[in-house]
Length: 172
Image (tube, rainbow, N blue to C red; front, side, top):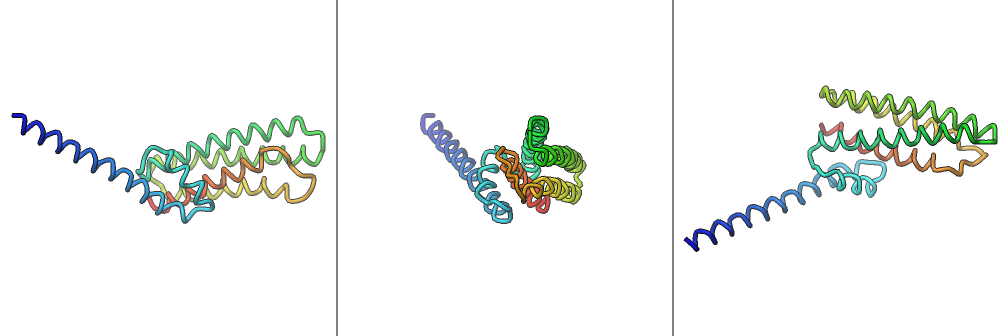
């Protein structure tokens, strides 16, 4: 009886070890498949490792939710900056950025709907639209006066997230 118990425990340890190793390998495989194709591979690796899943559809849900949260924060920031800016040029730019982020949020919400419907090409198309909207905001600050807020940094982060979504949607 004792020998059988030891054999069962050893078998369970072996299965658990295999499962853990498989999950680590899967996570590394997903990162090594997706991240080199993105605009910021190091950022991508960090995001995907924190996702808690290696399933492509799960990663798409996770990154779309992350993009939505980031876009909402950027919209809130742009609106706040538009209200408080004293420089008329900056005030106009922030106001325009708020419109761009509002459109980007709509695009991301459409991508979430497309994903739920299994329309992965649709996810790709509307995510590209979100990136265009974000780029429209970023472009407004190519000339002085300079933006000293976090809005441009947030836009870069959101574009990096959208880049991950594009790669994932192409793999689905």
